[in-house]
Length: 382
Ligand SMILES: *Cc1c(COP(=O)(O)O)cnc(C)c1O
Image (cartoon, rainbow, N blue to C red; front, side, top):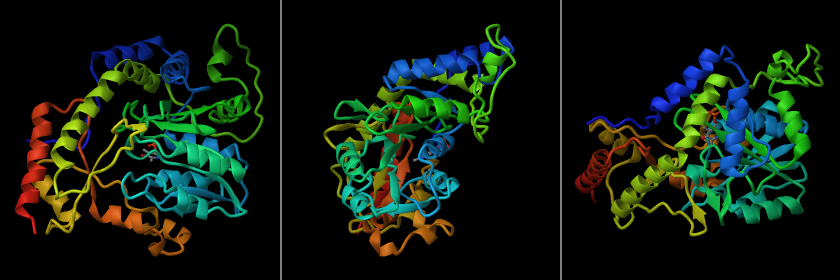
């Protein structure tokens, strides 16, 4: 059996939507994108959804709202994708890495608070795997220190924290529709913010700083006139991508339910086993299960994480590692004082791999993964 790490869930609905976009003759940002933004807002209840071409662009535009200067610092977890740090560097600011919690892989609140200096301007909590960070504590600490809270919600459509949807507790939220994320538009992202002025500025900045969207220029109510108010970006999405997003949003509840079922089967198989350290979802959180982290108990197993991945691969199962800590990269290492400060991040990195979890996985495929994991563990027990 061959089980890829991810398969997007597309059916005839996506094909119909995309065909419509193509046949309309307007393939760049236009009516489908407006529809997608509206549907996203209706589904999530989040304010001012602004579609862009990636979550990296979303994070960049969010950080632009702070008008950062060189020397300014932005705190992010060490255990995240490079995009989180990259966006901070785009703005000439310095990413400062906080350690994460061993059980949840979420930014450790104490470590975050310790990293705050007079130069800190913002914090980017990353809702790892689809579980929301401790937003009450993070927002509270941020308010006391005059920091902006930008949620990296790339994994978190939708995730709930004490009943509130991810993207709402912070000042700005950034979502991803990359190929492997919970819904996919091929490539894409969404910014949300309760700040109407920021929303207006982000809408302009995503398209060259132009004061009216291009589609309005060419529609009957538009004129050829527009202004450029500041240096913008080419971060707009297209109606082809948004057409995919519209179809994906219509099946989002089904897709989430299916990932939850698969994660539930994994939990039942692995959480009671001595071979693994159970990954914890806190009782006040409900995860989107974008990732299913498996953590090897290296005291009970005589096999490294890397060999475990190889053995699964030999059985046709593709996995991932989320993530290589940022300070281990040659570029980002310059922002870390010492690896010793990241005890939990290192602990996780040594033991973690991500198992396939996506709606088109069948029960047979799920059982095949469970059997393979247990069999490899059994054959390598100490
Ligand atoms: C995927 C991802 C991003 C970037 O999303 P893109 O849409 O690919 O730009 C940012 N942060 C995290 C944590 C991610 O997993």
